[in-house]
Image (tube, rainbow, N blue to C red; front, side, top):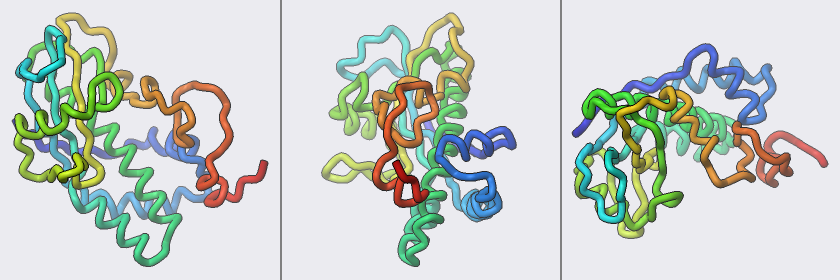
Length: 213
């Protein structure tokens, strides 16, 4: 199945954006300007299946698929990089991560509509399920807007492969379910928003934001 999705950020997302990605509030005009330029370039789709036909997945009910923001987002980031506008490129990358989270929510809602079940857990390949499932997922959902390279890389770059566990009982709201930081094992991620141990900034973040120990 193929579903057009329209991810966007709400007014409540801006405060979270600044705290999550370590921006001062005085950067908001620039961030909003880049977001305004990016949004018309987003061409987001979910390609998915609710058939229980993936090898090695023993869940009673699940859906799987690919979610992408399309090529335009990659092209905007590349344009900034080509002009050595590193801060703008970083902002564009951060915005695309937020838009992807919103796209996951819309994907989960579409799955609930199709299956008449509730989404209760969202997993990415490489965490609970092996990356070797990616070619199988790609073949099953036949995404016309996504390319799988010989080294198992997805293009456009802002594309993710997901498996959603389904159940007849609702356990989480969609936004909580799609809080990907909560279940991510990368505790040292400088953009982590879920509670975790206080960790040092990465070298890249220190250079961009002029942070000193």
